[in-house]
Length: 602
Image (tube, rainbow, N blue to C red; front, top):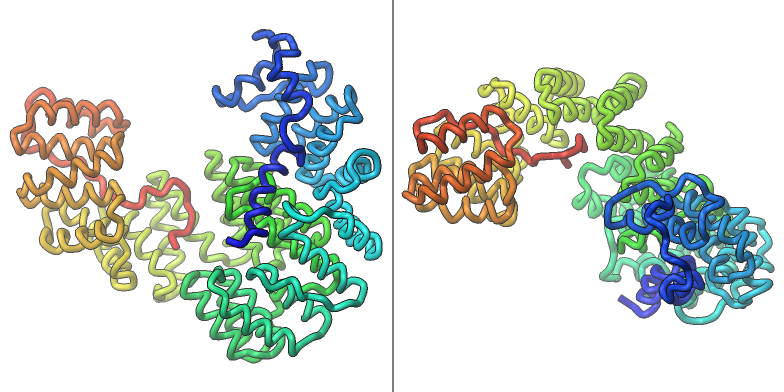
């Protein structure tokens, strides 16, 4: 990682506290005890103790509470990505101390994070004009405002005022080069240190119609070691845009090896094969769009480093300059979802227009988030809309997944069958339809059909650990094909050695084969990996009993009973605790991926 990139990531911590260095006035006052202790009867005290008690309820009133309480409540709200609420608390504090530059910086960051661009820019102007003329973050905001207003001379002045180092070390080359382009000057000499800088050098060259330079820099970019799949896709887009179809196809194929189910990639590849420039290629038609893409790239980079607060700020700046930037919108939605701000994420996903290539995926994400909140029927209704209005096959499968996870196996099978009917013959791209339907059929007691589906899935994906595990465990549980089941699950364990369910399956196959001593270490390892799983503890208890370790068997059975919610399993364990291990019918539960959400398997 180069020095400029390290500086950018280090700067992320600064944004998280509002761009202020060190403690703010109120943090220092609180640490020194200059405020009286907060009464336990005060609603503000919720904010003080909530981080440890997981109370997600700051004080309802944004005015009339103590300054210390408002500060802590706002900090707590920001920490939980409720930036609007944090901003309201900051408004109250600023009424009491409007000339505190540290608080103004934090208010500026909160405003941009909440999408209140005009307010954020007012704070930035106040900071630069009255308190700190070289504040890098404020000047960056003012640069964005100048680009937004097409006042490129003013943008250049703001960039020149930015200090070197820190934030500027990574962003300055892009700010400077796009500013130069906005004034009609072509200067990309400093954009060569990493893939992001080089990509923007290419974008500027495209913007200024420097085709020869574009081709040269594309070749240079392909020699970099740090290219991600998204970087490869971007380079392919540019090759397609300049009419280099063969090079574009080769790169799309390279990206598809990593993301074989990426529909947009496949669409771009098909366009390039037909000699047509990809109409999905996002390039800068205006300097503001170019700068917006630069801000998006910084947001993407910070998001990958889980610096979500900083990523949010840059993504908002990207949308400020380019309101049609779907990538920035999706990134904001993903950040909100990752931080369990589900309603915020849903609202952002729903901003994506149905004509946009990301529309279907975004609305499937909405269904996922509804499901995460326990709103199963709303999730199904969202997906059914996609099936009815857009003939979305993935949504149909996703409906089946919701029913399957909720153990409504007949409705799951009904939707999976409808998906197969739409496809005609299930192709390799939809191998997972065989897998999910096979699981539903097995749980519904239709073993012959389940076995056929699982075997078909395995023929498409012979080294998929979960298919190997599910089919092998099901055979072992029935006492069938034990040698083949052993071979399959050993292969699954070699692929996923730290998966507790798969390790348990291997021990259970040995158990079913009567090789109890061989089973012990694998079942013990499975319990280490998944200590509270009742099925795994029950299995370990059984094998302990078989090798004469009766006290340990009773201990594991008791653990299994304490953690089980399955009445049938609990009754079987109680019988074993009273009578020891007799020839009981094994509690049947094949080991799937244990998905907790109905997302597509690939």
